[in-house]
Image (tube, rainbow, N blue to C red; front, top):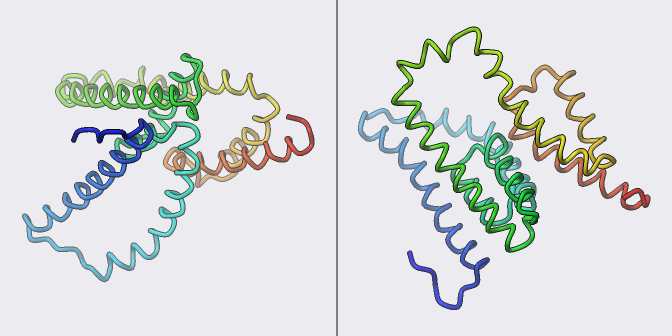
Length: 223
């Protein structure tokens, strides 16, 4: 696909972002359809529909909220690429934020758009390469990876990653960070149902709370 003439950078981002988003959506749907046709194992459509009715609205709501959450932080290009490659809150978001922080740009700027997209693209490529190496080496490395000595270190990878980012951003926005930090700590401490699997949902919740809190502080002249 070649870029259309007289198309600005942002126009091209939205143009190709939509195209690749649709392509990925179709490919994702074709996989279960292909398995169904190959093995002759059609799903129970009544059960499938009832399950979708029960669960789909929650994911629609989260999907809509994530658009308003991630676009200001990642830019349009970074958001398109993140939604296609996945693992946003655990990997793509920290990589993009750190890259823009080091470059001294914001996602709302065109330079920030470019930096964010490049960071997420590199992150996706590196992740893919690591997965390939992991698949090849999984058998000989299994005794090492399952070692009780290393298990505590692996359990702390994500906390260490987000802790490093948190120190930077909390120190720069101390007043603004108080409410969301207290809220998230309280939720994860006193609501046992929340765990690592709910991070994708809690990130948008935290952003919404932060925006509301920032608005209140701004109205009161604190910010």
